[in-house]
Length: 101
Image (cartoon, rainbow, N blue to C red):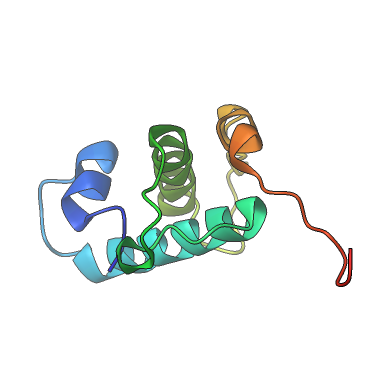
């Protein structure tokens, strides 16, 4: 189960329709997966580790960026991931140690 609900993401994106719900669900999964990879932590609801508010905010920023830039190729300039994304995740990173350390 995801730590960010469809309604959380739709509220962040200011979406009031249901036509893109499957897209938004996919973006939630991608954003949570990416944030888990960066922090080396598991925030799925059934893992027992709650998602800190800062990580949730970073995921929502990433979802917004992915939603706005859905095309791999675009004539308009791509909006980068907000600078706050890294700042929100940085304190939640766990250190990776080589095996046997």
